[in-house]
Image: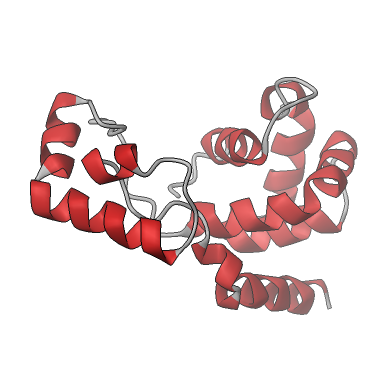
Amino acid sequence: MKKLMTLAAAGFLLASTQAMAIDSTGCGLGSTLWKGHRGAGPQLLAVTTNGTSGSQSFGITSGSLGCDPNGRITGGTGKVLFVFLENNMEQYAFDASRGEGETLYTIAGILGRPVEEVATVSKENFNTIFSDENTDVLTVATNLMNLLNVQA
């Protein structure tokens, strides 16, 4: 039953248009110029500027324009986890502190990891995952994925 719930939640998140709401323009001049704007228009302008100016290549090699030369290609797992945590952050914090709970099953399904591993890492590294009381969703998702050594 839990596997079915996990698969259903992951399927919903993958199909959700919110999963695409996270910055999908990459780094570069366009992303820098349009930083903070939302919607299809600014994203199209940012990605067009990035592509036509050659600024992504320059940014990646120089480490400028919001690019990280040591960054990794994520492929979307981080986006799904981010959306899930955005809607379930408080419950995940509660479950992580105990090392048990439904959010841990869902996260394990999203990341393709055993629930026991996700539960143990979450509980034992709670203070690292939630570095302070105002930790944002992106930081929590990144910290958890780093601790589990998951490629986004």
